[in-house]
Image (cartoon, rainbow, N blue to C red; front, side, top):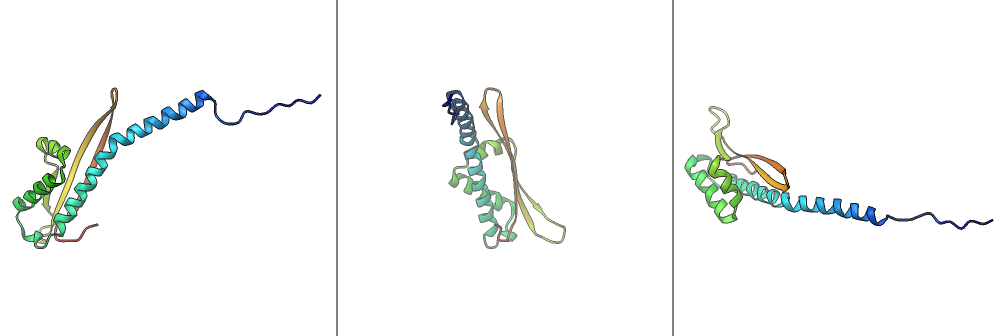
Amino acid sequence: MKKNRKNQQGLTFISWLIVAAVGMLILSAALKIGPSYIEFNSVRSMMNSIAAEPGIKTKSSKYVYGQINKYMNINGLYALEKISAKKKPFKLSLMKKGNNRKRLRVNYEVKIPWLGNISYLLDFKYAVILGEKNT
């Protein structure tokens, strides 16, 4: 007797639904957190531009914060403006006494609701030394 059985190849309908559901969850997560990373990239670019300005080392803190506000308005960093209304994310500090080098730092968190009571908490930090070219 000859049996002519073929093994199943590929996924079943239920397996395809599971794969599609997992793919949709990953896609929705990427669409939720993607804009925050794009915004942080703009913040880094802004800070590098401010640090590379000629003569920025000798400028006052008020001037540096004015430049930050100008760049934030030009680039449309509205989510960061909401954060800065509650807590100041940008800090300007001297590195070491007698060194007279200033460091501009940013540190902020973004909480993004996702599904029901599940949220993403993104923590962004970056620092540049004023008067030096940073990458």
